[in-house]
Image 1 (cartoon, helix red, strand yellow):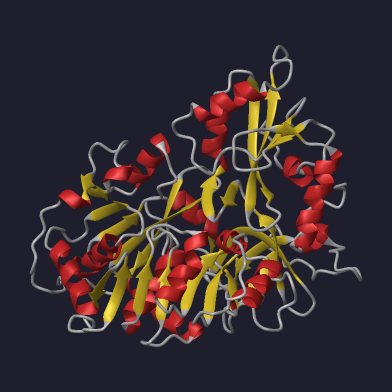
Image 2 (tube, rainbow, N blue to C red; image 1 turned 45 degrees about the horizontal axis):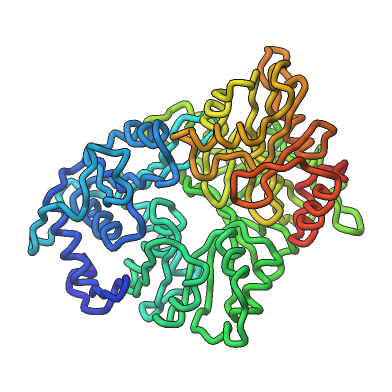
Length: 526
């Protein structure tokens, strides 16, 4: 309600502006058609409506479910059903597979509804369900209360030293916590200005920042790489940016961005669950994640729950004792900060152990207390900052008729995050991979997510199995593409596979070296 009478510009979008008073009124108009406790699914690009419906839910005590538009077919439907969505809102461009969705442009809303907060609303009221993904393939929707979002907003204001005069550029997808918690929430708390872009555009980044005098932006590592791939000019540093905040950027990309655009970056390790944060500081060693804030203990634990020995390095910076130093990143007192998953007690049990919160990610800690990332634990992937489980991808690839057995697992990307790798055991009559046939198969799958097609495809003679005859992915993940088995890969984004040669492997290793991620490769790689 603090913004109800605020005449300062709060939102800029495609040539239009709204004051905070007008934004609050738009929220109230939508709150009039909601019911307390109702679940509102939003399958939208970054439109002003996203912010208006978020505010409407906060006023009414409803719940916003951010739907990921990269999901397709049955997986998209499963997300909606799993979160008990009672009202599904979308725009015409996303409506083809959702016949029961309401188009936001067709809604008949009041124009001057009373601005009130429903009596049912408290700090504990559930406000958001933010999708992540886990090893089982089942949907995981992180619960976020009104109180948690408010606390995150306050923390972001302090961490980024934001003021009411800041102009925050928002082009990251608003179904994700990165956008809401590091941009929208603190801007709302302060009454600062948000410049909203429908979808991220590398070529549009600098023109937008200049046109609107933006001072802050949030990012994911891949978006920085795309921006740096645009043609540089002598005037790139002619902008008012003073800080960018995000995750998973390589040291080289961070340095290149700051040098080119004159804007320092603050990079972090965290997740939608909000239980653990590790921040880089000015004295963080190159390539390290950083350290957690004071009073939030984090440890590297082995499978038995014991703390792993500290990492030792060679003179060239190579990890010497990874077999004993690498373990799971665990917040030893962080469980109370995790508000749980919606309708998924099994997944909660995997994360919470007493007061400890288990991330499922792998890392190590050096003698000086710095934390380092060592890859994804569990059976899930993060590609272009999108989380998804391996299970649904395996289910799709298993439809490929020549396949006897399929295993999908993450391998590191040379620059940031993961790439999808699949090991496929073909039947004896296949005669090897029919590349055109496999590509046609992938294109024909209606539920194949936009990030799910394998970047690397290993033809394995016999799938490794555990003692209980389950697929053992550990050796597959450890070998990556350093194997004598045939490995096919996609050099670019197109579904076009070619056989990996030793020269390709050497070039890939050089790329990992360029972005200082050699520690993520097995030492046996050529």
